[in-house]
Length: 98
Image 1 (cartoon, rainbow, N blue to C red):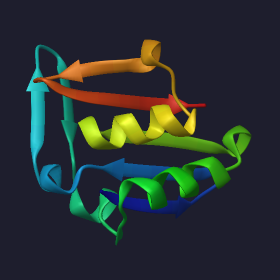
Image 2 (image 1 turned 90 degrees about the vertical axis):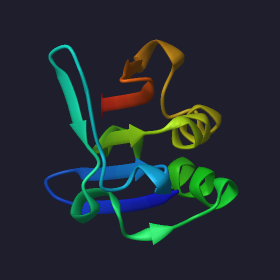
Image 3 (image 1 turned 135 degrees about the vertical axis):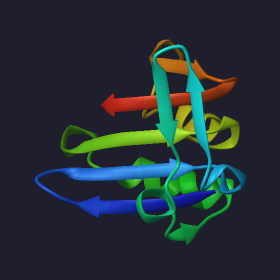
């Protein structure tokens, strides 16, 4: 997985499965671009990713999570719930404030 933390007025955490970097997914009116400049920074395994997500101040973060492995890690870290997951072109996505 690739994770990148952007510092803005609040933290923006971009997490995506490595094999999705550079791809665009569309379905009906929904679209997500998994841009390298937004998502690609550090490659981490599942356990490292879970630890990073658990350490985030969830009150001060926005999350963009794309891909099965990334979604599973975020669920395990308890930063998202199953109800917050959508699917775009068969790719699970979770976006928003936590």
